Image (cartoon, rainbow, N blue to C red; front, side, top):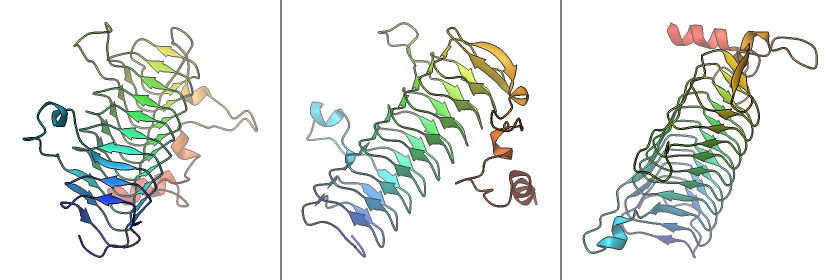
Length: 260
């Protein structure tokens, strides 16, 4: 270990752990072997990082914990459990009591809300926002700049219980509103909007608003206007920038800079 900063005396740190500079680890947190914590990471109390997979219970003598790599500047709040064998990008942030299972690949600047459950074998892009109590089933793919609001469920078993898994795919800039359920194998298209409490049984076309049970197309996102002043609100990246890479400069200016 190197340049250890702010590790609580009750924390339990494995012998084969790599800790960057200016890392804080809270009381009663456990960090298993083969965890890498990037610089300036803050881990709250009673977290478990590098939770072993099921293999340790079947044959502990030969089990070797897969690496868990957490990028720099992470904020991991109390009660969170992140399994071995995952990779989290820089500036990751989560609420309390979040669970992230094995073989999750999570990009940079991702925020995951309190009590959310990422069931592993998932791909989550950059600047994704999950609010509280989001459930993401195995083999889900969530692209960059997606918003998923509270109590949304991404399912994966078309004939439960079965051995067949078909993860949901959510494309860039899509928004899924609260208490919606996306059924196995569905693709939610780029820039689409799923209305609250929707049951989505089939693919959602790009730039489309769907709502209801079963969810049906009700409008183009371009038809949606602000209830406050009637202005255009979608695509949301043109009117919202907080926490995004185009903050204070606008999406088009930022995009032009990316292309230069």
